[in-house]
Amino acid sequence: MAIPESRATRNRAPAYLASSPTSPLNSNLTLYSAIAAAPKSLVYSHILPIRSGHAWTVPAGSTCRITTPEGPQVGDLNLWNLHNPRERFWASRTRQLHRSHVTTLDRLWSCLPYLRPMVTIIEDSLGDYGVDEVGGRCHDLLGTRCDPYVNKMLTGDDFDYHCHSNLTRAILPYGLNESDVHDVLNVFQVTGLNKDGQYFMETSPAKPGDYFEFFAEIDILCALSTCPGGDLSAWEWGEGKEGVDVVDMVDCCRPLGIEVYQLTNTKVLDSWNPPMSPTYHGMHGLKLPTFQR
Image 1: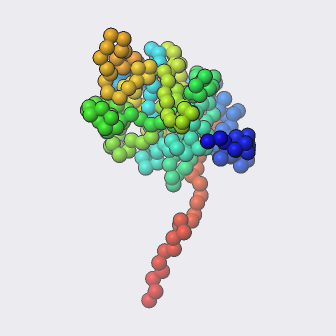
Image 2: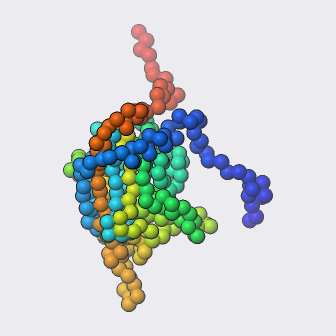
Image 3: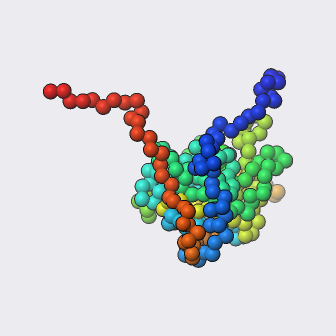
C-alpha cells in the first residue's frame, strides 16, 4: 500500500516535548557535565560473572558506572527506590519521554504514581554509536529481558540463567522476589525495528573498557544481569545447535564491571535537588461517599 504523500512528508514531531527550558525532561547540561567531571572516590566495585545477577545500592548524589572489562557483553538493568520498591523503573514511559535508545543526559523514570527521574545518564563511551546501516541503536529500551517462560514455549527446554532468573536471584537478599523484576534497560545492546516493525538485535559494539555511567537522583537499588547471550553475536533461543561452524552462545559471554563513586567535593551539588513527584491531587474522577445520618 502506498503511503499518502501528506503522511510520508509531514514533520513527525516527538509526542512528548519539554514545555519549558526548566522542564524535568531537559537535564541541566552545566550541572551534569560538572558532576561527570568532578573528582570522585570509589566506594564499591564488583565484577559480575557471566550468566549471573547482582544487586547493589547507590545513594542519592552518587554515581554508578557499568563497564565491559573484557569486551562486548549485554547487561539487563533494573532499578527500584531503595526505600519503596513499589517505585521502580518504567521503561516504556522513559522511551516515550526521551527515545528508544538512551544516552548522555537522558533520564530513567519511575512508574506511576511517582513519575520522577531515578537516575540521569552522565557518561556513555558508546554515545557516538548513532544509527548504523540497518537502523540499529545502542542501549535498548525497545525490548526486555530474556526469560525461561518464553524459552520453554519456543524450545521446550528449561534454562535457569536467563536475565529474568538472574535478576530474580539477585534481589532475594533485599526482600524482593520474581514479581518485582520489571522491564529493563538493555545496556550495551544494539537493537531496532525492521521495515515490517519487527524487533531485531545486533552484536554489541562494546570494547574492553567501555562504560555507561549514571547519577543517582534518589537512593536506589540496582540489579544487573549478564545476559546469557553474551554479546548476542550467536543469539538464539535454547543453548545452540550442533554443527562445525556453530558458535556456542556461552563462548560469547563476558563479565561486566560495577563501580559506585562518591563525589569528593559535594559543592558541585549545591544547585541540585532530589526530584519530586508530580503534585496530582485528583481522585481519578472518583467521589468518596459521605456519611449521612
